[in-house]
Image (cartoon, rainbow over all chains, first blue to last red; front, side, top):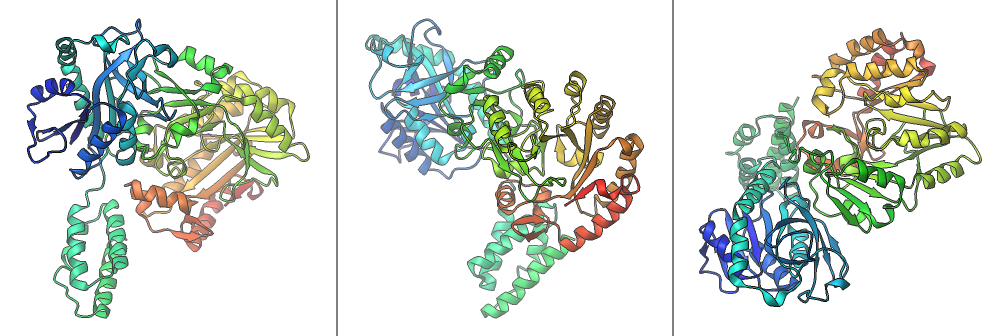
Amino acid sequence: MIYIITALMLEASPIIGYFKLKRDMTINSYPVFVNKEIALIVSGIGKVKSAMAATFLISKYRLTGSDVLVNIGFCGAQAGKYPLGTLLLINKVTDWDTGKDYYPDVYIGDDLPKESVACCSKPVGDNGNQYEGNLFDMESAGIMEAAYKFFNTQQIAIIKIVSDFLTPENLDKQVLRSYINTNIPILERILNELKQLNSMVTSLNFEDEKKLISLISQNLRLTSAMKQILETEVRNAKRKGLKTVETLESHLESKANTKLEGKKIFGQIIKDIKQQTF
Amino acid sequence: MDKSLKISSSRLFNAIYIEEEAFEYPITKEIIKSHPNSPIIKIRHYKDLFNRPKQNFGIQKHNQSLILAVKENNFLYKGPEVCQNFGHANFYYTSFLLNCIFDCEYCYLQGMYPSANLVAFVNTEHYKSAIKDAASNEPIFLAASYDTDLIAFHNVIPYMDYFYDFFKANTDIVAEVRTKSGNQSFYRCHEPLENIIIAFTLSPQDIINKFERHTPSLETRIKAIRTAISQGYKIRICLDPIFINPETDSLYEPFFRYIFEKINPDDIWDLGYGFFRMSRDFFKRIETKNNSWLFAQDYSHYNDVVSYPLEIQNEIKSKHIDIISKYIEKERIFAL
């Protein structure tokens, strides 16, 4: 799943349209838009709101190792380095209030510019000189704080589009929307690269074995500790490339009326799995 | 992880992170100059990045970033018991570089560090003072390339060039530089020193194919050894780690014979021999996140070290040492 957080509906609407997202009417606290692959939430402005929205969205789903969390939004920039509408990948976020730095690992968008962003609590205008750095936003630190809790560092992407040269009071909505629209093909590419990268992180598929272990544990009245031992042994056998499902299935019919009986059969299962491994 | 996880292909490093304090050091300036296409990211302290929670070692390993940092303290450590001291009472090791460019499946670094990114310390003069202090009362044996491979990294940061004159001037320090690299430039550019030992880790080619990703072939390593010998360097052969497994047991005897067909045993300073072993803590950390067959085997634990049962080790060791000692006398064989 791709979780997208934007601060404004203005930032979200071109994405909603392009990816044909539908409003999830079961959720009232936030505007959330979804399709099979994407869930987008509009958080409101500021790092506290972005952290809350990210956490809320993540809690609605069962996270997997291949999910990604993406923040897409506007940022102000010091004039000179990047033209308006430029899309940038962020490799460092500094919370200007706390001084804390966050580092998403950026392995995507090889050809795209990478930059640091300072996350501020107030819009940065002509007071921009008091900050070090080129880019300023108001949400990235909140997203990173939530993301560090729930995601691996390569599952996070902070994507910023330059909206103004520190003149936040003079923004035209139509122009801003066009910046997002123009960058949609790049955005789609980034999302695909992120998906591809994280799908490569293959974990051992242990779902079938887990179900069988659960059934056997019930049938044999195994304690949690015994179940844990069984899981470890089966996992090791699987990593050695052995047929774990078959061994477990051969014990599926075994039943125990007492814990002692269960313990005996448990010993036999462990023995079978271990014997198989030599 | 069975697919290539390399995403960026146009640069050696995915990014270069530089501590604020490190910018003024010559190594940093050289790295910035020689890697113009890598994004440079200023950081406060390397641990802010290196010790982040929830990093994926596998993906980082295939897309390594370089972190340039200033080491503040603990410039050298007492040698651990799981490592060989080759008869030296004062055994220390030091790490100018954390992590390695090679990707050995059995490597303990995956359990030791939370990140696969490389940390290169740029304040080499501080290391020199600390090493000199440690050797002020009595000679020391210094493993200089333990948690990394300095020779393999030589073309990026030539630490051995930076330390050559220091070792030349401080003969109370015997430095071992352990490597799997085929890079010969250091041996070709510097006269050998009495107190520098180049320690080559060798494994049967099938083991290299199976467990030592991105490392040079046995043939390439042997070529590098021959060059280093021809230049007059003291060479240590490290047959470590040895694996005990029905699939690999038969590889070793022909491998030992092959080495000494290619290298004159009289040209070898000494030889180290050791089985696959690892601190229990590191093993546990790796076991939970690594699907490797290697970490699913049944091992014994003793003194918080995971390895093969001692009686099997002794049996295999005696068989192997019998063969090796036909080429090199037992006094020059150091077995753990």
